Length: 452
Image 1 (tube, rainbow, N blue to C red):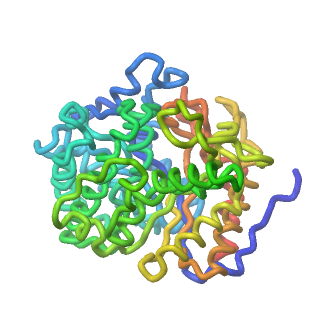
Image 2 (cartoon, rainbow, N blue to C red; image 1 turned 180 degrees about the vertical axis):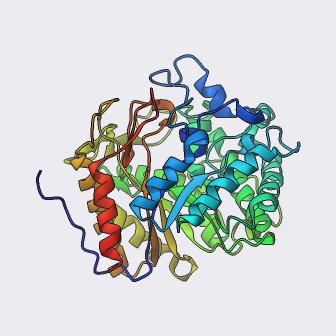
């Protein structure tokens, strides 16, 4: 076996946290167990041809029934914290309706088992599983959804706040808005283009409302996490630079600016409709954030669009970059993470709270069934490069406190079903058998070395 890459850990301070992540719909299975309700991902999964391989996310890794195996793996891995998500419809099947004790009990057992293993539970309130009932009433396009989310947050905080103290509120609002409502490649599968923009504001408002509820019930740490990308213009031409600037606003700034500055970018100057902001919204959104979460996978190269295009930019391959299992859509450029973090530090200055890398990882082709550990050298190389990139950002003065690998387990990868595998642990989706990969041992050794 060739020598494995070893990141330079000299810039990582003592106490820097190492984590791994999953999400409820992707790993739990048991979609109809114990009164669980129906979400937009149940609807999307049951839509013919919506998921690439027809996978249903059930049972998948079957973590609703096998979570203790996951906790044992996390203990062996040696992580400081485990990022998981709470399924809205497992806890509250009908928005505004009664809370399911079975759902709360499941997450309490998980949190208790994690703490017993010496691992801090770090929960995400919302990882894309909006109740179907709310989508039928407008979903995130409707302001009322933010207030229904606040009620859900209150119920979860009241039921679990003594057990879970560290929280993400909303995961990747950009993915919900742009892929879910603008182009329809993710649930709820709507194709509204710029008509999707109200969903941005309503998710951020939901974050502010939920953060208040969590803090009232003893939360020690609350923040939002978004998928961000370093936008690279295809050339120095005025047209490409303008297109890249517009895309940067849509993917990055309309999500980060309200949280970190209390204001949206000037969308009307770009020919877009203004956000449906009401008095007091922005103050709530920009209220105390204990950290800012950044999920990072790849940079995005942008060029000017054809004049007939309904949007003023085009996403292009990144020249010379190797790719993950997603092909040219996911170029591998670790230095882009350093560039993104440095840009955030320069742009937001002292308004940027400590940064948590909430997700970072890669999928590569792997077999469905294995007889032993997979030598996933490509994943190790990807992770090593991006951990080095975090180290470079630390040297440049960015206050990064935590790095999280996506994902602990191979899981249901949304519209790509079971065709993409991100896990440090291989999962046989026929049997749910878990087999740690070479990257699992590599990450375990890296965490051990970082603590010396």
